[in-house]
Amino acid sequence: MMGNLVLQRYFGRQYLLWFAAFLISLSGIVLLFEVAELMRRAGGRPDVGFIIIMKMGVYKLPETIEKILPFVVLFAGLFTFWRLTRSQELVIARSAGVSAWQFMMPALLVTLIFSLLNIAVINPMGAAMNARYHMMEMHYLERVPTLELTGAGLWLRQRDSQRHYLLHADHIEMNPLTLSPLMAFIYDDNDVYLGRVDAPRAVLTEGAWDVPDAWVNMDQQPAQHVDDWRLPTSLTLGKIQESMAAPNTISFWELPRFIRALKTIGLPQTRHQLAFQSLLSQPLLLCAMVFFAASFALRMNRRGSVTGMIISGVLLGSLLYTLNNVVNALGANQTLPVALAAWAIPAVALALSNAALLHLEDG
Image (tube, rainbow, N blue to C red; front, side, top):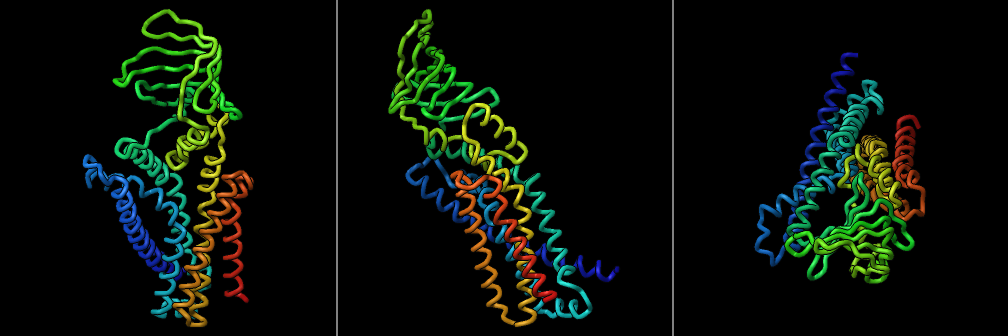
């Protein structure tokens, strides 16, 4: 019993070292590409220096690391078991009666702990960093925000050549896009308050907000009633939806509250529901990668085709990653139910990897 525990700790340390090595190296490669892309976008802007670019790259890094985690787990498992097989340690352990489930369990436990830590702690930190990245992107790369959702309703910002407007509504309807009730604050270019407009509703038409039965209060004058006030705008329904707070800028713990707020005011919640369910299903996908890595280790041990098995493992990981993205896209487009889109590929991958390991171990 004590020998098995020592052996499992040794396997766990080996896997943890490879996991850290791949996580750091792949993150470094991703950071280089992110910085290169940001430098391209910041070309011709002397006020955006290299330090700012590096900060933005670091702030954006957690979003990309979230996407490459399955590859990190798969590569770490493959190289851990490949090294143990090459040094004959795995062969000796197998001949001593250690089953595939026993030598795989430390890697599985490390992966499960990390995935839970990622959901509970790393994801909220990454969401805050992503939010900071988007703020810097707006400030330095001129990406203008249009929408902000809070517990007090919906806020929209828009500008024209002389003024900018802050629109507020408690509720929104989608076809056509209608804000109700409307409260619009008007400012000049120097952020000096000019007045406000109140109305029961505002309807987005092509190139303008149509505001019937409006009360306009400008330049500290008494409010005047206007039967049909119009506010020119370049906003469209697509722009408003795209500018809504992205799921990756909201932490796992805040997503349920945000989804309820979206539902209350009538905005679509599909992307945020999908992000929440995908985070919950992430441990299944990562554990499936460990099972696949262990399956390839057994095949390497029996058939000796190390390079072929590693290539097969990489191709399999790429296939699962692509399928998962395709199914998630179908869920985001509401072609599939959100729960099915988030859980289907992780559940199928876990079932297939368990079946493969059972076949190689007992079959």
